[in-house]
Image (tube, rainbow, N blue to C red; front, side, top):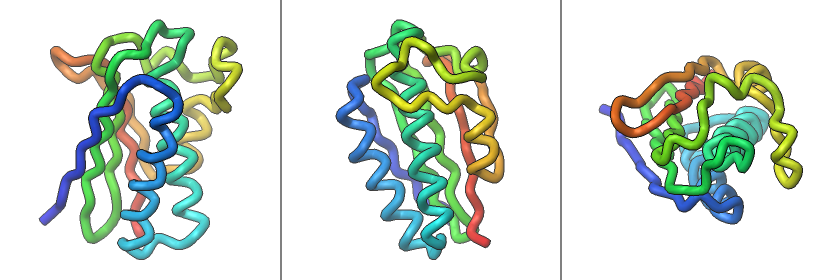
Length: 133
């Protein structure tokens, strides 16, 4: 049986850190090694940054869901105000000068699975999976 944690986050950069730390603590409890936890932290930061990307006119609320299973984590970030189109953010955003915009290609290198989708009636989202080795 999986547990699910859900964060509804204001679209402000200062709230990325607490979400990132909470998910990294869950990953540590699941038995991920230090390198995998660092990968998860970078991926969560990047996905959250895309949800509040000033180049996409975001800054409303976004949602982070973390499904915790015995074999790993599934982390979803959903832009609830429709400001970001994750599928259009393959490369770093030139307008995100205060953030380290890495693009989806880096997320795909850090996580086991990454997919972009439209969440009906809410906005676009990105789902990332990391399995315990």
